[in-house]
Amino acid sequence: MTETHRPARIFALGSLNVDLVVQVDRFPQPGETLPGRTFHTFPGGKGGNQAVAVARLGGSPSMAARLGDDSFGEEYLATLIREGVQVNQVERIPGKTTGTALIEVDQRGQNRIVVVAGANECWDDRAVSIALAGIAEGDILLLQLEIPLPAVIEAALIASRRGAQVILDPAPAPEAPLPRELLGALSWCTPNEHEAALITGIATSSAGGQREAALALVRHGVSRAVVKAGARGAWLALEDRAELLPGFPVEARDTTAAGDSFNGGLAWALSHHFSPREAVIRANAVAALSTTGLGAQTAMPTAARLSSFLEKAGITPGEQKNRDTPASDP
Image 1: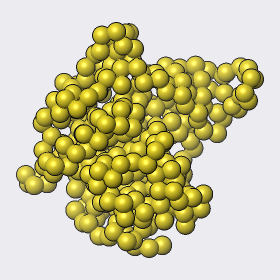
Image 2 (image 1 turned 60 degrees about the vertical axis):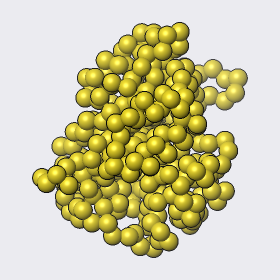
Image 3 (image 1 turned 180 degrees about the vertical axis):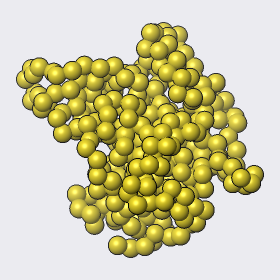
């Protein structure tokens, strides 16, 4: 492999949460108490999930994050190290609790989530600058919205100025429009249908609305936009053209980290110089496989499992590599 085609370095700056997961037959109504079927504790948080997704695929991502000085933080740090994530910029914050997420999962694999940020709130511009001191041209930065928005903006601007690709997963859904300075710094923005509707003001209940929302993000300054449409796949918009890239059918058990797995898979594929279209196809496959186990990180695939899955789907693992062909209208 020539120097120009070595995998790009991947950085993830974002949240680390411990997921407290209850399986239920159905979600309770307000004021209703229901028995749960099982209870599990898993490592999660959108930043951690995306970093682990990259590591499972064989990457060596650098994680920048904050943990509390509690037992959850100690356990999570050990998990990241075990997964092969670089943790030089993961800091334990005295007096703070590690972020937690309370998750209900029903029989269909659908979920409801409440997040308590804890140590994830402990970011400022100086901390971001220190965490990204090593990012450079050609690198890839994964961002989400589970840490303070000013920190996300600062990280995107730093990485963009240095020539790195910036991938933003705008989740949890923003309560206000995302600033233009942030959108203009993004190489990729990857909302789901709900998030895309809030960001663009376009109803996304139909395929046409999802397509228009993806194109609107590009008009707002994002280089490439993806609207994730669950099991149906993902809309990819480049310039003034958009295409639905279908998802992969699997028996889903838990969709909690499907979006995070998508972004980790996208970063991994881009780091290996796949075209945008081929990268999204692989991200769709990673997301599908991630739903086949219980827990955010449990079923995230290895590169070998992904390759086997793609081959069974009739997709050659290396096809169309290094091509940047624009997507076409459906």
